[in-house]
Length: 96
Image (cartoon, rainbow, N blue to C red; front, side, top):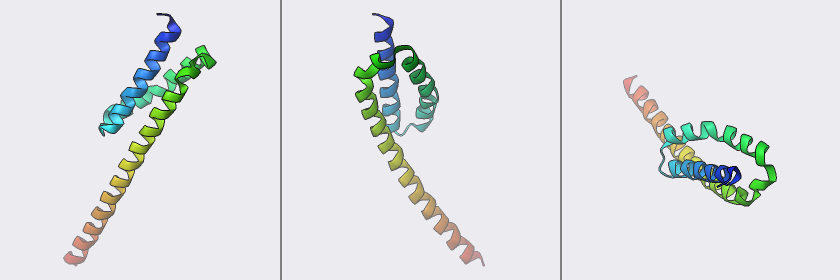
């Protein structure tokens, strides 16, 4: 297998691992994977450029799914924060 094919597999594998982590809400794992993603992607594009176009669509689909997972988690966290803020306000009112 030549180095271009290895890079394609590496990119697809990394992308799928990030997607799986996001779907499982394993945000620590996602953060670890995401921290090295841009470096890997930029290096690959600088070395192979347009030769990576065949996997571009799949990488974009994964990214869109990841964005949906992140947006969903943000909404959930915002609701929890709002609920906790209201609970704290209620407790403060009670203690006065």
